[in-house]
Structures are given as structure tokens and as C-alpha cells.
Amino acid sequence: MSDPIRRPVTYGDGAVEALPQLVADLERRRVLLVTGRRSFEASGAQRVLPALEAAAQVRRFSDFSPNTDVDDLALGLVEVARFDPDLIVAIGGGSALDLAKLLCAFRGTTDPDELRSGIRAGHRIDRRDTALILVPTTSGSGAEATHFAVVYIGDEKFSVGSPALLPDRVVLDPQLTVTGSAYQRATSGIDAVAQAVESLWATGATDRSRRFARHALRLLLPHLERFVEQPTDEPARAMALGSHLAGRAIDISRTTAAHALSYGITKGYGVSHGHAVALTLGPFIEAHAAAAAGDLQPGVDAALHARVMERVTALLGATSGTDARDRFVAMIERLGLVSRLSDVGVVTADQRAALVDGVNVERLGNNPVAFDSAQLLSLVERAA
Ligand SMILES: [Zn+2]
Image (cartoon, rainbow, N blue to C red):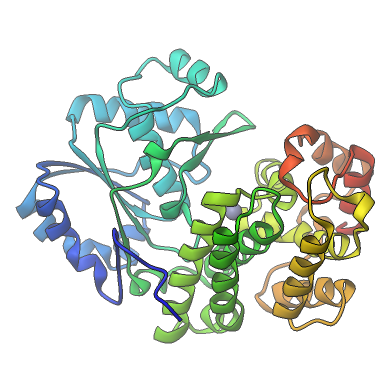
């Protein structure tokens, strides 16, 4: 198999130690280091700090919560204005990486109202003057591989996208990903699986994105359970590479309905992102496998969709769409995750209807099966 990883990715156990050299190569002098509050120390990435401080002036920013909020972004932008970095390095989970991408995108905007209206208006970001290096400590959000970032204004989710959000360098060090909790490894890992599955069937998929997604699943599915149980070297390497490839896949194809529904579950019920996605992915696998040509979006090739669903079913070791759903649900339970919406507090018909109302059905155009609100509600009922 050819190596899908090309520059600018530095990959391997201990790769984080290359960071000071990367900073020197980019000839940067002022580094804003965006890190999680605990993961920087816990992951072991902290050991590069002395060498980094020898290579450049470093200021650390970790004053933010998971699921990047516009108020945290505004605080970070004030820090950027004060410190005036020529490089932003993020070492952390998906939220830290997304925040760093957003700091680059909105650099120069410190007025919170202007920031909010810029995000709401979907202002095009054409260029980035600050260099950007992303170092994930989870496997994985794929955030280091995508040209978009999620930011919330209150409970409302926005996706900011621009080629300028792709980093100059990525450091993929599997050893940084093994110290999170089993729950964290499970939710991040299942997010990567969901991204790859959704990418395979997305209407925005291309031959290239499908290659990334298939390769991702071949790495992720055989290693995820071991990675959660006991993250030894081999599963950690497979998960780091697999989740990066899943990120490369959705960078091209974007995600679909299970992701669209997940944001309301995360914000409304405090469920971590990957877990929220996994709660409806099983029923989506079944519904997508059962879809007839007339159920598909205009322009979706029914034969291609059928082949994609055969592939998804086979990768899960299943013989039918229903079997694939059951196997996926059994897998998330073996990872220690509850598998039903009712288990996380989505109990009443009103709550389920509100979740569906929170999704803009017109924005589900990337989903291969055309769901109207009633069909989406019926799917959510199956996940209840
Ligand atoms: Zn995701």
C-alpha cells in the first residue's frame, strides 16, 4: 500500500520532538501555543517546551472550554492582538486545533459584535498571515486535516471554512494520544469511524476522498477496541493515521446527517461530540443500505450508492444493512458507550422533535438519502 501521508505531515512515535526544528525551519520567533488545560502535560507534549522556548518566544493560551465558543475565541483574539505571534501552534484535541484555526482566520477582529456578525455572515477568509502548526493529542477529530472549524454562538453551531485554515505543518505523534481516558479514546475514535463512514456515502465524495475513507476504516475498525481497552503502540499508530485519513476524507466530502444531528445532542445534553454522532449512525447505516433509487438525492448514482453501502456493510463484517446497524451498535457498547438517545436524556417525543427541528433540512443536501423532517424524525425514533 502506498504511503498516503505526504509532507507537510511529520508522523511517528516521538514526532512531537521535531516541533522546535519545524519552528526554526519556518523562521518564526513569536509562538502562541494553544493547548488544552490538562492534555499538554498529560500527553507528554510538555517536554518539548524548553527546546521550543530556546527556538522562539512562547506564550501559552489554554483559557477555553471544549466545543469552541465565540466568547473563548474573542478572548484568544485579544491575546493574539497583545502578543502579536508570527506562528500559532496548537497541541490538543479537536477543540484546541479548531480554536487555533479560528484565531488565524479572525485575527485582527477584537470587537465581539463584529466577530459574531462576521461568523454569522460567513465572511470569506482568503488569506492567513500567521503560520499554523497543528499537533493532535487525540485520535481523532481529524481537525488537523480539514479546512473548516466549528464555533458556537450560544447554542447555534457555525462551520467556518477556508483553504486558509489548512495548517502549514502537522505533527502526528501516536504517543501523545494514549494518555486520555478510555471514554475520551472511545468517543474520539468513534468520531473518526463516523467521519469515514459518512464520507464514503456523502454526495460530496470523490474517488480520492473515498480512497482516504476506505483506508481510514481499514486502520480504525480493527484497532479501535484495543486502543480503548489498552492503548499499546500498534493500535495507537493505526488510530493516529486512521483518524488523520478520515479527516483528509471529510476535508473533501464534508460530513452528513449523523453529524448534523449530533450538534444539538452535544449542546443540549452535554454529550461529547463523537458519542453524539455515534448515537444515530447505526440507524443511518441501516436506512442508507435499505434506500431505493427513488429515496436518493437528485444526482446520486444509485448503483454507486449501493456499492458504497455494500462496502460499509462488509467493513463492519456484516451481511445486511440491519446486521451492520446491529454490529455498529454492539461495537459502541463494547467501547463502554451507551447506545441509545434515551440513555443520554433524550427521552420524550418533544425532545426528539426539537432535535430534528434544530437541523436545517436544506443543509442535509450532502446526505445521499433525501430525508424530509418527518423521515428524519422517524429515524431519530429508531435511535431512541
Ligand atoms: Zn466529528
